[in-house]
Image (cartoon, rainbow over all chains, first blue to last red; front, side, top):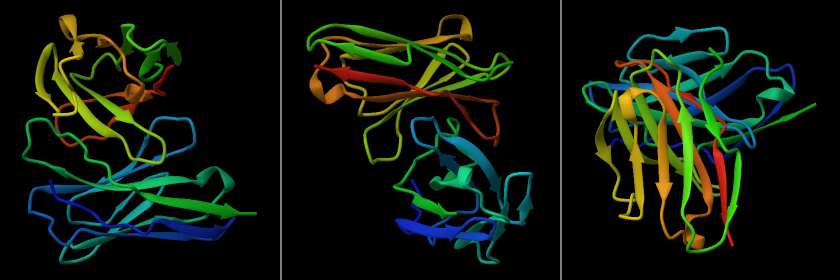
Length: 112
Length: 113
């Protein structure tokens, strides 16, 4: 399974943008880049995913490098409720199972 | 639809007892996954169902673990002869086939004493 590398932790101030990086240098052509987040005592929550082009939704934006070896999750205005563990995951689009393999993720702290 | 529902939310059991957890996925989702998560770690894949067929099992799923999804609707995960090392959060997720996001439940926290 392709792996991703994320910083262990990051801090942000409330109301400011947050850029969460992810490296995936061994990504294959069929791998989709997925992001999930997990708040304390809850199951993970889907945030966004993409293949080659940048993606936007109501929660966040996903910027994918041209060579696809890295990506950045962008939270446009961090709130205290965005404090969570953020997971960057490669999901094999050609796989029959589509299972997600989670790493350690990035723990985001948001300061008021 | 209220999302993925897991019951119970918490379970405390004595070592050696059997436990069973239930997951009710989003009704139109044909894919269902079970994960296990221990403190400070990301979720670990356990098993996958497409409709009623169990198509993949992780090596983590020892012979004490069994999962079913009769009729392709709800699923159960049973652990026999529980051990202290089984203490964890057990998460269920469902999705459509294809490259869609998963919806996770809130999990069942198991404590084996």
